[in-house]
Length: 320
Figure 1 (tube, helix red, strand yellow):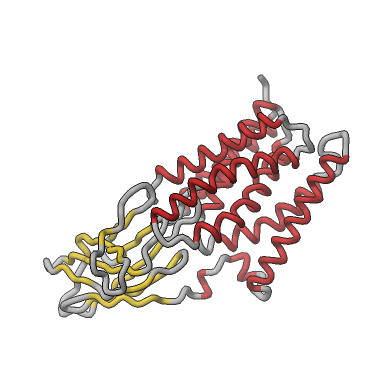
Figure 2: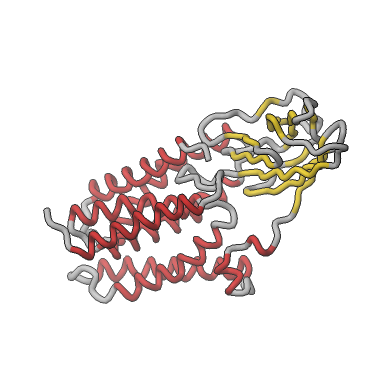
């Protein structure tokens, strides 16, 4: 089958963007569609007689405030804890409420920290190294770390602005669905509305990068698959990318609060096992509606299954 030059260029451009996403992504941030994963960043400050570096360490998970019966963070799938010379990072499907660090340093001494509590998503800590132990304290994320687009917008709306954008986006998606079912000829006068969907979606995705790049990576991964599908089936590339963007923004907006509220690996994984089939069916249904019923139900289910299986598989297999 022969493909037009424009289609080839679009595929190449999307592959380049995906590659750049991986290149600019700091370690530990890119985790695909296995749901939002909480993470912790530990920056170490030495207050010892001689400079020390980290040799090895563990993040202990505790059910009790005194950390009796603590166990190391289970290293399975994306659950991981790793350190460099003066910095440690962990990510997990879910943490226990209480945590403790046990770190071995270059002077041969293994130091244990005070008990500290978990945050909801990305949390930063300062770890002060003294002669006998460690002192962990949570630090507030600075304003400069907010997404660039929301800084440019002034963040005047705060969470209210995000809710307003979300409602406008939902209205546009409903309008797009109604238009698709109302017209006999596919995509008639729908491109301006699709552009509006992109304009409303980008700030919301940008805001999500404050906590994780997972939604962005998910859209990139699924976008490449859709580009291949659209090329093989000779479908409108821009329309299909818009569909994928729309369904992901909707499902991620529902998934994140649910998954982010889970406090343990077991509850997080159980919730994901329930949520993923529901997301598969919901996204298949949205694709069917956005196509105005022109997409066979079995094809909608198959496309949604492939998209979610690939992005979920990447999220489960890639530990960072």
